[in-house]
Length: 433
Image (cartoon, rainbow, N blue to C red; front, side):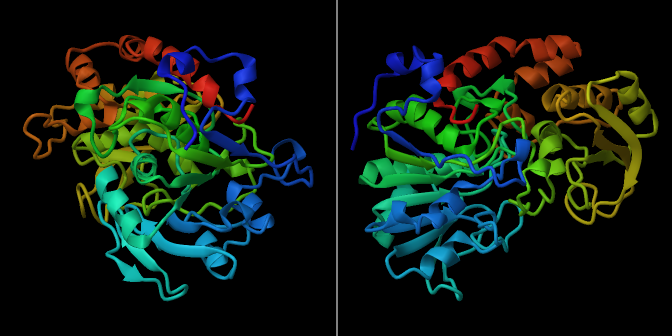
């Protein structure tokens, strides 16, 4: 295993050369630009999985491979990478590991698929949802893995759980001496960094380590960040042998709608790229007694409750928030909060993705919802940290500031320095300019 530089050395990075120079313990497998058309600026956007497949999966030959994936791990022809790998005699796939919602995606939020034999490939699929690094390592040993492949479409937000599945898998791979390969995919909401930093005291399944809320990185870049900043101080320390198969032809300014790639919902309540754009902020409403639109056709774009009224949309539009409008909307959730009840609220409409600020917009929406007497923060059974919003936002700060009547500028200004510091640190790990 390659030695990792000290944290102090890594923190000193950030020069222009750092974008192009591989870190110790990291390999970024890039492909030359493909200018065949269909993507941003006339370039065809090709995910890392397709780059690896076009090379005959050379990166995995001679290895005992375990694949962490879900339905989003598809090639451009919509076939799953595991199905493609399993057909090749020169590859040895020893197991598949399914996160939340399962490998084939048959489970709802907060659920998974139990261990089973995949009927298409005959491979054993292990239930990895909720597995910490120790349990993940046990699963990898059981399967006989010496190389872990991660291929899941992320949506660029700290409280979307797949990045923490990746983190646990990276620690587990390091601890058993296995290599780790990320088949990279575009971040559907781009490079913008925003939102509060998680504090260690509020680590949970929706935020394990101190990164900011909207991290603005691909999973490959985030894996490099984890490997340089977090793994060296986790457990016995040290990095994992990491390879990132880069996306070809992608610019961070290219939204998911313009990549030319099929959108496979990474979870049942993430049906479109527009959902991901809103979710970076409106995910906060999971921490309230308002419906965040689960049980509708537009989760995280519809937000409302039986106690709201038309004034809610009027007040939000009066704020003239950049890149967004709010349509007065009514909906009846078929499941989750307020099931079967008519909710008044808004449909969030992003009018200019480049100007839209997901986190400040959601804070403004929370402030206006708190005008209503029936508004409440959602609680969970965690008696020491009872407010779900604190886990989503990473600390009690957001809730306490809003309860105290802080302005939108005061709330968002409270994490401005954290965002700057994070952006400075992440520069060393970025792969796409």
